[in-house]
Length: 301
Image (tube, rainbow, N blue to C red; front, side, top):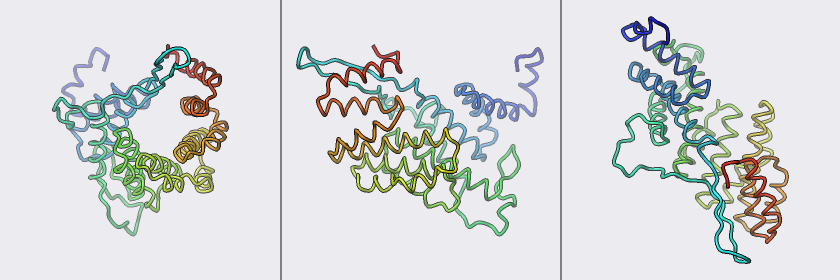
């Protein structure tokens, strides 16, 4: 596209293929904005390909839910013995009030939700064929996918859908997507593990703590993650234990919550640890944790 003959690509009959492949390459290198532009163009040529809609949603999630997009802010209120420290994430408005349609392509979670609905529509529920390796669904410009590939694609869409709906502060819909995935007999261990985590978070938001605890049952999660790579196991473990600590906090059991958090070696739980220290009156520990948060988040003043 940068060579002297790049203008030929504009009128090339295979332009859509080049743009689609370039979008996948850019997505693989975490260039969500470049990938999004390419995949939007590819979607106009191949609107019946559920993979393209799933990748478009992935672009939106990478852009909107990255660590860089979610910075902490620290505010001090009062003075002297009445000083209060407020630590929070900057939360942007989830739904636009400008009257613009969410159907207009944009790197937003609302558009991601729309893309995932398109993908799910193109992957309808049906009985598995006798030969699960036979071609089943047309996905131009690629070759038709089999029943197994269709199931993997749908499960990926369900997991991402639950995650997006949680960020859009729609826990009930997120719970429906997570439970639908858990009901799939051919869901992978990693998909099921994340579905349990998202279901638990949705139930916490719905104030159904007892039900949330059931999704965080240690033996269940251990059986699912035991076959996964080490890095994935570590990510899931941090999420599970953090959610378990939140459940104990909401039940008023701060001692157990603190014991759980002390087992997690991750900067992601530092704000939760700071909250517990504030609740128990350990101001000195609060300052120590605040220094750690500032060290891991240089943007905090």
